[in-house]
Image (cartoon, rainbow, N blue to C red; front, top):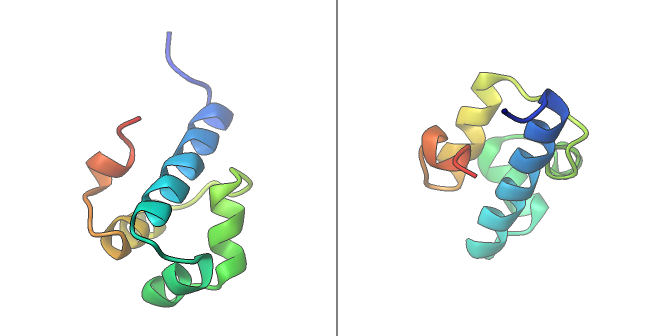
Length: 73
């Protein structure tokens, strides 16, 4: 049995935050790297946003990882 969409979005947000913390970046710094606002980063990290594949790629690229690694939780 897999995870629900809501669970997936929540787990993805937690993974993004963990990777951002590992990279020692603030939400604002990550947002600047992605050319996105820091509030968007926060909403994604809290699981409040269902992001597009394009934005998933932007997160992965800004964190120096592949999409596959980012969604491997």
